Length: 147
Ligand code: HEM
Ligand code: HEM
Image (tube, rainbow, N blue to C red; front, top):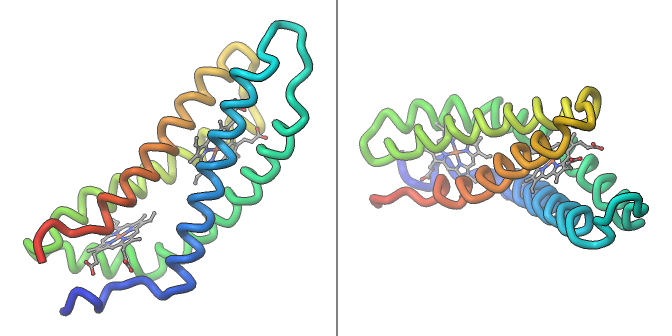
């Protein structure tokens, strides 16, 4: 199998990176607004905070759809390919990407439906760290060490 046999279709790469970039930017913007602008007790949240999280929620639905698209062919095909030494490194990083994606969906769901005020900040930070970790790992994952 050649290196190019496993390249994602262009629309898939665009969809994945588009949603990923939007999630990261809107998440970081929300953190910046929430924790620096008007963070004093009793102050109203910055009006852009609501728009940042609306955009984040929209991108999250898109990203979950794209992960479903990958689950249909990229992941099983990549799993078989990464049995060879040349792509062995992709197996670990790919499996970690799947685990981080599941963790983000779970913590995102908890933030939306369940988080009591006492655990919300810690859960939000854990969610954000997992998100930033996933963004960084995609960059490592897509570049095999050996050619
Ligand atoms: C167990 C899970 C996975 C395995 C075994 C796997 C395997 C692979 C392999 C072997 C390649 C190298 C292709 C090449 O060098 O031509 C690759 C590329 C890539 N993978 Fe995965 N992958 C997995 C999950 C994921 C996930 C969850 C994502 C996204 C969040 C992802 C995103 C990518 C991207 C963007 C590329 C580069 C493709 C391109 O440039 O067109 N993979 N993967
Ligand atoms: C597949 C990826 C992701 C999914 C499915 C996801 C989903 C969600 C959901 C459902 C919420 C709750 C929205 C609400 O309370 O109205 C949320 C909140 C949040 N997300 Fe994400 N997210 C993802 C990636 C990221 C990334 C990459 C970051 C980067 C920093 C991030 C940072 C945040 C922050 C800061 C919040 C607000 C936390 C809080 O309310 O305390 N997320 N996310």
